[in-house]
Image (cartoon, rainbow, N blue to C red; front, side, top):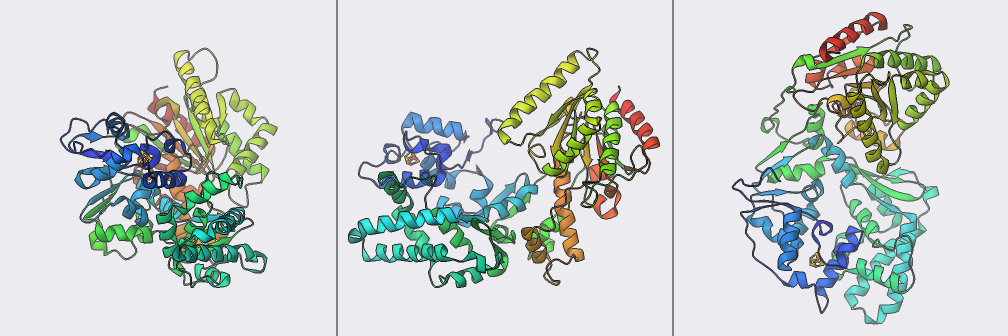
Length: 578
Ligand code: SF4
């Protein structure tokens, strides 16, 4: 937004109440749902919200980020949240998070009209995951019990004051809750369709959409929270509308039966969306054009298939360009055998084989000798990371690595990432300043593909002169959720059978995660790095075809470690001028 200032067009950031509310009480509420309810209740109360009452016409030509609008609201004592909504129709460019764009109910509640608009989705490689996450809903058994308890007490206390209509909706809600409470999950299958669950619960005749409208209009969620507070029905759910999760889950059950599955787990019901096109095709139908922009969009074909299965392909255009770096700034190699000629392949069968783990350790130890400064190593999962490091510690490999690189490991807690990266960067900066002070030439950071380091964190310049990929992060084929995704991708064969279409999707999922991770090191035109795959499967044709062209075009497979190590150390030395 700062870069756009001074340019002659209007733009602003559409945000939620948590971004924009300036009311002292409401703005401190931590749950967004509760904040929304509290705002509506306040506006409707006899005193109202003083910021809501004061409307102001504001200049549409200026470009505003969240801070600008908040300042404007505070100066004029006018609610920035409602100011932002007023700006929608008159502003040329509106920035908004995925969920506001992709959920029809949210678009409607904000009054976002997509007809004839141009939509640009940045970081679009995350789109399918984002949609699936957005459309996945979970309600826990504890939450259901809590909601039932709260609603029953509320109903008993105020029954005489309720209108006939209110009573009817509250009774329907009680009926739904009661059906969930009585549901005998032990006697049922653990994965079922939405319709099966509705029938088993015997609630398919209830119109959940009408109940949802009633709850929204009456502010029932917030009233129940207030009622709980007053009557000491407090629980860990004190800040959450007790019926909100249940309603969201029930609304998911209204989707087309084939588009999702219900997973009945130990302590929850979970609805998983299998069809990301339900969120995306309405955009395709309404927008003038949509631009999906991303750095790691490969493999594009499967992406388009999942998001826009009904799109006339003549309407789809692909523009793909190489990376801006000169090709000598990137070294890409697959090393198929380790220093003692053992094959390097860490898969489901070999992940506990000590000879394989030891050989990988020896290969890594050799490679880091020639990599200057930072080196990021990715492994397929947290379990594999732990077991591999444990073994390398036992046989002294970690100790030898620590003689050359200071060792860091991805933290399990997200809150520790900032501190770890600060220490990692600081160590490399110190080594840059005093290169001869010790034999340590940099840092090595052990991370997990798809973990906290594989997206949104840049290892540019000396922070990442090599990304080393050990193994392939295939998802667990035993996972029921994955099985349902694969079944959805190809309904022609029974569940559990790998057809070419399913294999393709399965590989795509894996390679999407790999591509995210290997793109961490090259971040600008003058950057340079090595990408080293320590697993022979990265030479397979179908796998290479899923690596972005700017990387795969440079890929050199190396069958044997000795000659390969000599050649890569020469190339690295020449390329990196060390
Ligand atoms: S009207 Fe605006 S300032 Fe008032 S409570 Fe709602 S969001 Fe907050």
